[in-house]
Every structure is written in structure tokens, then in C-alpha cells.
Length: 262
Image (cartoon, rainbow, N blue to C red; front, side):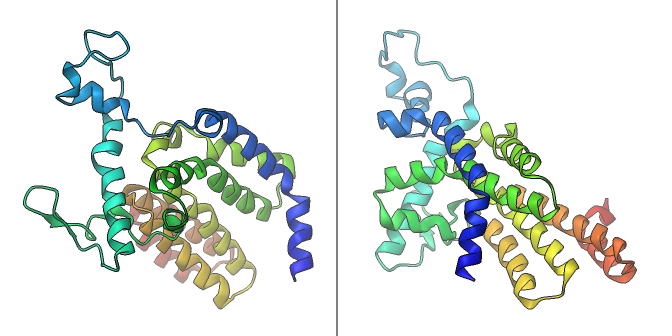
């Protein structure tokens, strides 16, 4: 089995090389200059007392073009840091004492406290782990989509081009520094792959895998994309059920997709 696995890796390593090259170019400032992919410039451009300072000779203040990106430095980064530190201290991250008089922390889906790739934060310093966590998004999403497309019997070139488009599509790119959109989206192609495998042959292993893929999408911390992914998952399962003329199962999937309620 391991021999077959490594043969498959060797045969498809081209897509990994392409995705790694493009990601290296995208994050060249982090990889070669040590700059962190976090929009910390918004701190000095949007918040006092730093707004009153002169930065880089700009007496009128440091310009901000995307105010939404401030969520990273004022919410997402601190929330994840708090959750990871609490877990390292042997605590369940139930409470955030730093917002107002305290707010539930684990109930905040954006903390992504139990996401599997949080392992990075236990292996490296938090700033470096966060940067790596952000930087691997295009590679992971591209590889996941490549596996799905290859399962559809597409050629290597077609699957590689498809993986590049999915890995670097605009919705992900403009939110790349959020560190969660890509991690939430990457599980959808794998869940669709599980549907294909189940359509070929019923298997508890692939049923469990599909369930875990959707669960990991939920743990990744961007609930909107998780909901979209679940809807697409159900509609794709609906389509595959129709192909098998399993109309009862198809109706169940369509009902679960949410489009029935529109």
C-alpha cells in the first residue's frame, strides 16, 4: 500500500511544485524577508494613539484601503492567541476576559480553537505559526481540488489548472490574511471526493471521511463558507443520486441543501 502511495505522489508531484512556486512568489516577503503576513499597518492607520504619530513621513496619517482587514489584528489574531495559550495551560478556552466584562470564547466560532492545523501553534512560536498557517492555504486548497478533479478522470494539465484557479480565486485572495477562509474552503473538494467514492462503492471509510471533512470545515472558523460548502455538498450528492436513479436519496439531499426553503 505504501509503495502504491509513493508512486501516486511521484506521478502527481508536478501540481505540488507548481502550487509551491506560486505560493512562494505570493509570500516572498515572508519567506525571504521575514515579514509576517498580518495587516499590522492598520493599527497605526486606524487607532489612537498611533494615528497621531508620523509614519514613513506621512503627516496626514497612514492610509488604509481595506477597513475590513482590521478584523485580523483586532479580533482573529488575538482570539486565536488567547485560545492557544489557554489550551497550552491545560484550560478549555471557555471565556475571554478581555472583551467588555468578559464574553464566551469557545462559543465564538472564529476562535477555531480545535481546528486540526492548530498543531502548528504547538510546534512553532505563535507569530511564525500564524504566518505559516496563512501561507499554506493556497497549497492545501489547490491540492484538495486537484484530488477531486483527478477523481473525475480529468487530465493532469486540466486538474492542475483547475487547482490553480481554485487556490488563487479572488474570494480567497482578498481574505487570505484572515487565515481561515482557505482553511474552511479546502475541505469542500475532499467532501465531494468522498461522495464520488461512495457513488462508486458504498464504504464506511468514505462515509466517515466525508463526515470528518465537513466537520473540519466547521472547526476552521469561517461559518459562512461552511454553510455554503454544506449546501454544495448536498446538491452534489443530489446530482449523483439522480444519476444512480436513487430518487428517494436525491430528495433527501435536496431537502437538506437548504434550497428547498428558498
